[in-house]
Image 1 (cartoon, helix red, strand yellow):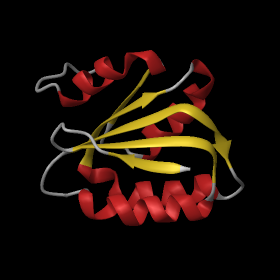
Image 2: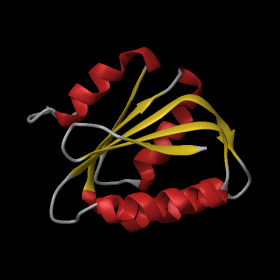
Image 3: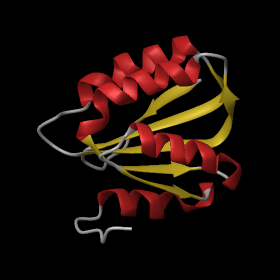
Length: 124
């Protein structure tokens, strides 16, 4: 399941992904957040994978296609996830080429949001 979470920080799109993610869920999510992404401004994405089990066959491909269409408008992506998702962090960074991607432990949500919305971040 993918849930678009309300977040009071400007330009942050927060998604909570739980259980197994399907192609249909990725499509619904892309329809919901596509209009929120804006090429004229830089957007931030918070991915909460703290309860994610994985992706069904084909779902990653659909997500990659969406990411490749939207990558230029995203500047930072914070992933709340356990270390087991490090390979997926690298895949997200490859898809969203203009973005800096960083993983935070699930308990560090506030730090992740602060990093996303910080005005000046030194390159990593």
